[in-house]
Length: 165
Image (tube, rainbow, N blue to C red; front, top):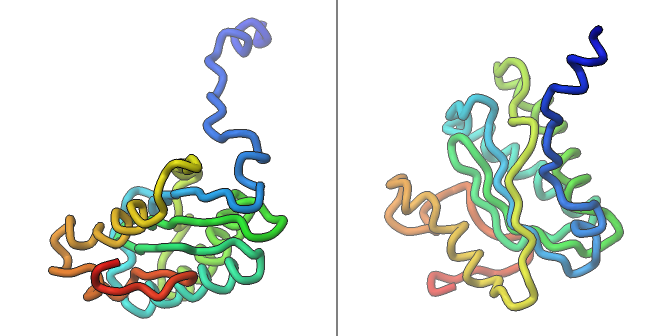
């Protein structure tokens, strides 16, 4: 009886590429991770700074380069590059788990991040600098600052960024 019903239910679509697409050295992946319920939780500079610290720690530990990042009030944009033997998905799982636990110390409840994330694996023909400009310009487009380098939660752990990028 229930088997008939289960067979007719729509199966959840696989939204992730095969793990190998996220693991090859040199692979660059643009990722957007949203806060659960799109709550604006990163208006607290102490929490935002602590989240950026976790991103740095986990990226160094797992050897995934952070070419650019921008922590907006309700989501994170990041351009990652695989430098070691750990895939981008594993980095994001570790990052999301540690920052969720961290957020509880700042009075937040429940899950910090939405279950999944949006990603785009860059092709060899796609330019890093274009994606970096896009990521860093997010707070400008949102009207939070006049110039990207006025925003405290954006930057790069791989490059020394300049005004002209």
